[in-house]
Length: 257
Image (cartoon, rainbow, N blue to C red; front, side, top):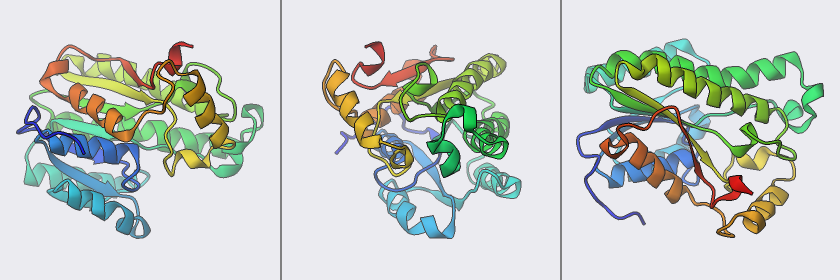
């Protein structure tokens, strides 16, 4: 249970990518709620609704809307609802990644053109699409966060094509931070250690990845979604007012060894 405080009181945030109560985005939403923010959450499909709705209820989400980031009309509808309800947006969390299973489990050199295009579109360009819609609603400044992984920087066994995809995501974060900086919109990436989430379970030999992280990290334990959420809450707060273009590691130090 996260301690309650009010350092995000009055902040309005959109959290995209909650899959269930164990997902990174759920940990972020819980931390924002505990810190006083008002939230809009989304769910991808009707099938996912029953897994995401308990999270939306737990964080008292004022808006809970369908959003498939490959559907332009749904993106437009979400931001129209935010503008109508709040008239502004203080922060956006993009916690979305996808790659077709065959391409995810294969070698990078064997990745299909369609698989690569899909992974880049859903995992990277969706951040650009959401940032584009968020920009006009952040007239007073704001923060955009996305979620990466150490495989963007170093080769991680079995992470395969998602390594180059996450590298593109981190590069996009840096470019967005420069382009939006004059409007006082900060853009950063969170880079948690491996977490036992539904999305991560699709990685081949994921148990080995977990065991390696626990063994090699200086803290010799796994990160939690609450810890990732705490970092996210700090980064969207005024405490991090000069932090932009960064990748913030929350991995027990695993990335240094």
